[in-house]
Length: 279
View 1 (cartoon, helix red, strand yellow):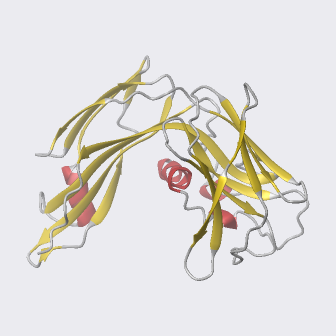
View 2 (cartoon, rainbow, N blue to C red):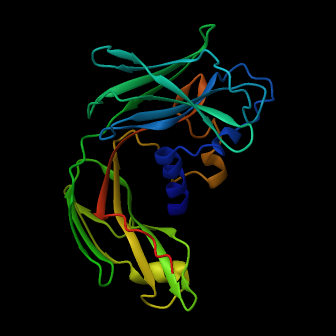
């Protein structure tokens, strides 16, 4: 289940839901779903993104022409409403998706609704409650054993704790191409009365991922990612991996399908980006 949660968070955080467009067959008769909506509202993000696609006759959209969709974000407490900007993203071949965004600041512990509307007035709606702000934790790091100590406070549940490395294996032939290694620490974090702690070493995990001995690798960047979420975080513990991507099993979109999550995320750059080894 931990792997399923990581995969699902990847969809939330990095907007790679091409597979999510496969949640059902759009070629079937459809009088229930108007849009698919996927994304996150992040307390600490400078730009909010959601992916909104009309449910039509094609499994993978190939039409780059504007479809007239209007996406709005409204704050529930005072009714303040803004229209999101649209951006067309092209994937391999003739596959297109529409992402909608705003640089509007969002407030912690507030509920927001996202409404997508067709030119004919049909709508899909998702209501999301944001968690409390997540303070920047204290981080101590030693490059000798790639050891990390993290201490912080949160009023919410931690749904993602991981370190990310850009690394290169060093072999007799020289430096291998650069790779990213992501290590989850979700099960290593202790959390008591809102105070969480992490203490671990990552050198052996990196070496195993690269299939090299001991310290035969170079680290070109180190990052720590921490994400918290509130009580309305959609749980996955009772779902199979297949059920996670079924619209009737996991969706908080009315008259549509998809998931919009409210989170607070922190990305801490432990060591700056170094130029890759060219040997």
